[in-house]
Length: 97
Image (tube, rainbow, N blue to C red):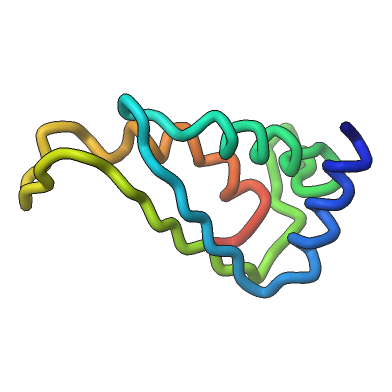
């Protein structure tokens, strides 16, 4: 599992931009994206604690999210979009968005 994580981290550090395309299921992210996040967010590789606070180590990367949802999207959605972002905030530890 660690070698797979190293492979993903190598690709991330060599890239200038990451595009994350993700479907949203029941107000949450797909389990495959959650697994990928678990593999790439590693202490002393993508973030470190400085003065007790997390500090990103991969900087200067752009990370646009392409989110697919079902249902009717209105100008004022019935559910708060922050529900999904609470699951994906860890990517901000690995990059400057």
